[in-house]
Image (cartoon, rainbow, N blue to C red; front, side, top):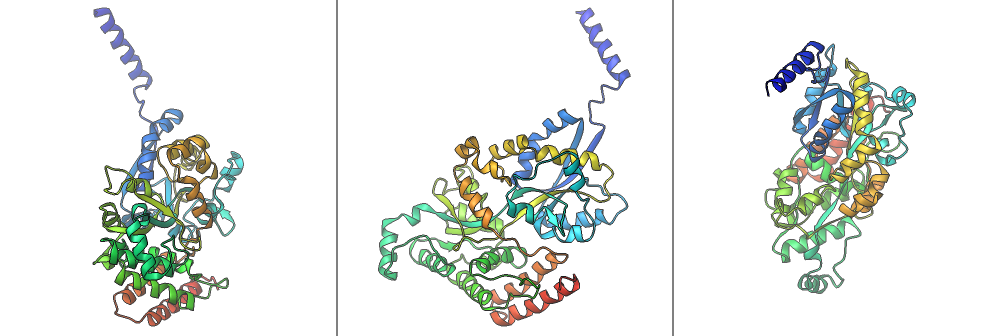
Amino acid sequence: MRRSLLAVCLILAVMLASGVQAAAPKVALVMLMEDVPETRIIETLLPEFEKATGIGVEFEIVQYGDMHAKLVTQFMSPESHYDVIQVDNYWAGEFPAARWLEPLDKYISRDKFDISDYVPSMVDMVGYYDGKLYMLPMYNYAMCIVYRTDLMSDPKLQKAFEAEYKAPMLAPTTVAEYVTLCKFMQKNAGVSGSAMQAQRGDPIVMEWSNYLFSCGGSYYDKSWHSTVNRPEAIKATELYIDNVKHGAPQGALSFNLDDAFRVMSQGRAFSMISYNWMLPQLNDPSKSKVAGKVAIAAMPGGIGLNGGWGWAIAHNGTRKEEAWRFIKWVESQETARKRALLGGAPTKRSMFTDKEVVRNYPWYPQVLDILENARPVPEFQYSAQMIEVMGRELSLAASGQKEIKAALDSAAKELDALARQSKMK
């Protein structure tokens, strides 16, 4: 026993002398991450990266609203505290335009990293800016309709719908039909028609953008003239506000994503327009009273709002090679597949069709269709300001403080000014 103890002591002494005790990584990358399921999934895999490379990783996990200011402060400092940058698509124009991100082309070329598997809508949104690759897509949050299958298949509701509208109750093919269905459910099913997130700012803009795109509208034309006050946008806004007033829960004008999820998961709404990755949350019995009764569908017309995050490297980071090694690892086919199997939101085509992934998540091929046709908000230097303007004017219109046309005219004027300011026209 004493000999064994002596041996252990000797080993420890050798380790201390040789520095092996510092199994702690010599380099620790710091990343600011949003508190979402994808972050938690990657967090569980970090030991694999650290074991393979000897590079440590420290996640600073915060809420979305805290991220932009923290990142900008670091970009404007002599050295960034954050090495790998998580970039929302709202910032995918602003950050590269300000030269705050390291171009990735040289790393991709040098290491022959294959980007051909990414869904084009993702790499266009959180990949290239002005012809250069600054980001690699991290995860998607393309939006769609999330709805209750039990209510759609209820014979009594089907009969009542047909009696009122002289037509069968089917999946909506237009936004107007969707709003009609929501109002019908509100009136007949004992639930709200749509768990809407009409809070001023980002929530109302994200939700409204789905109505806008599905009605054939846009933010700008090809020459960067604002189009948010054109007939398609006015129609989309009228339908949106009609649903807020007659198809949504009381208080929806102050609801954000969390509020909408709470209403839907408690079985108090027929539908919501939200992220596709809400589906597994709503079908999880530990989180939802309607588990097993929820499905997703593309927005009518097939075009919803695309959203997603990308990986990037800070322009003033001091560990750029190590940061690239992390991105290369986390976006490798092997790690991307592990993330998908753990319930992540993929950005590569092969992950949506992988047999084992689809066996666990049979709706993923449907998500791929939604993702391939989804459209992001315009990405340029002032995307964040554009969202602020739209959020303010839509909120004024939805709360009745401003006429719809007047609100959209005001928004269009300011969006034109932002485009001129950024020299987009």
